[in-house]
Image: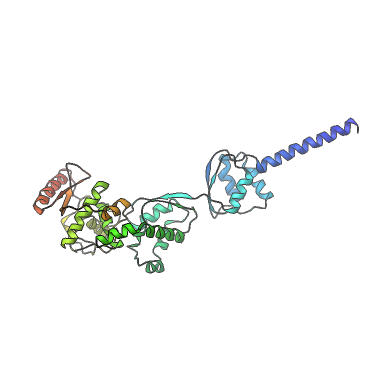
Amino acid sequence: MNKKVLYILSAILLIAGILGYNYYQKIFGKAITKDQVLFVLSTDNLVDVKKKIQDYSKSPETFLWVSAKKNFSKPKVGRYVLKEGMSNNDLVNMLRSGRQTPLKISFNNQDTLEKFAGRIAEQIEADSISLITSFTNKAFLEENNLTEKSVLQIFIPNTYEFYWTVSPEKFRTKMLVAYKRFWNESRLKKARALNLSKDEVITLASIVQKETAQNVERPIVAGLYLNRLKKGMPLQADPTIIYCVKEVKGQDYVVKRVLTADLKINSPYNTYLNRGLPPTLIAMPDISAIDGVLNAAKHNYYYMCVNVDKLGYHAFAKTLSQHNRNASKYHRWLNSQGVNR
């Protein structure tokens, strides 16, 4: 074999090697340049995905090239965690299989089902309307002895793991399972000792939740309301009056002061006019409020109002005369601050 032939063969091998290396790099080489979360919508095609990864892909065009080579045409909807160094082959396989990474969904106490649905819709693919529709499904409510007002109680504020594409129905089901798990034998035993059902504990906890933001006060406030219930006294809980006002005026109506006229609102949630607990919860209580009820403090307090000497806390009283002194001090403070509503 003469030198010319060797040169030609060497050139062919070199070109083949270069082409092979480039081919390999397009498919298996490092394509993703940094960790990133990719959201693929139901309306997205491969070109849309290419546009979304262009800021953290060495060559977005090669993603389309590899997709074509692997006969891949439609990415599965999802939330995908991409890692630095991933190849186009890895990416295509991930989008083809729908191999999502679950995410942590958190929520705190929400006043209404609408606000809760909005909070969740910010974190998963489903919109708030589809979530509300699922939560208030008639068959679901009847099967679980719930109503459109009481269904809010099955959502215990915490952090949960879901896939971004979770359906409203699967989300609802998982939350119901978590709610049932929350009511373990220890909590049920404590509820029975208080002569309260789960629903009643949640209802009282929602009032405690709205009454005080201080975790340390919640068992004290719960104990006070339990004292009133045992004695047959109306709860006279201002949070229930604020709930009634918002039912009339709208959820965005701001109530900084409960007026005498508010106490006459004709509603089963008015705990000044009606004895016992309201029909359902008035807001979503968090775990500290629920456990505050289940572990209510034992004392002889029957009255409370805002402590103007320590704002954010309450002044508790055993007698009406003592409470009236505390209340007068609080009303004078409200007047001095110009708080009329």
